[in-house]
Image (cartoon, rainbow, N blue to C red; front, side, top):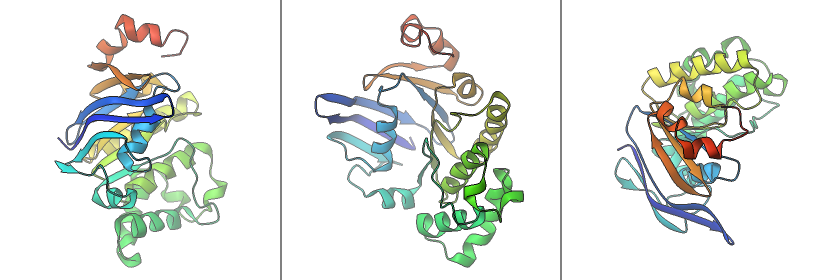
Length: 238
């Protein structure tokens, strides 16, 4: 397994945001995670990426226990992530944003980052916007830049947190095509998303969280057809 969590737990006061979560993700796999608001999805990502410390359990990357490893060291080890709300360095250009990620997230020299960043700009559809200030980008372009910055750290595992949120239907299709291309390059993806049809177009396996617990896992369409999952998603567009 590329990534494993074993009985991973985190509480905020009386709220169990992660309740003994067991997760396994194989190399080159794409896994989707769904659940209602407050289910613990982003907390799980924060635990894996190291921005929140676990109360219990373990996190393993390629068999190595990284549970107490600092967030920047997890990034260097191969975990990249995006955030729900893109927050680029707005006064820097798109290319400069990627260079910062490549230098500080992966330890490349500035000169060594140039070719890498150029390739990522092509893969994420941002080449024509390379010299534009990030603060002037559209929402779709900001989402693309958020993915591109994560890719600039050369991740083995890419965590996507509601990357399609707020996009139009056509923009969502464009983004899905980009994510498929990233996956085809061999990057392992774990993707949290409320727009379920986007997930179904990409992932091999779907996991459902509710109140910090994993309640379903399996082939995506079979999981979505289960009565328990339908009940949780009653009233949500799937």
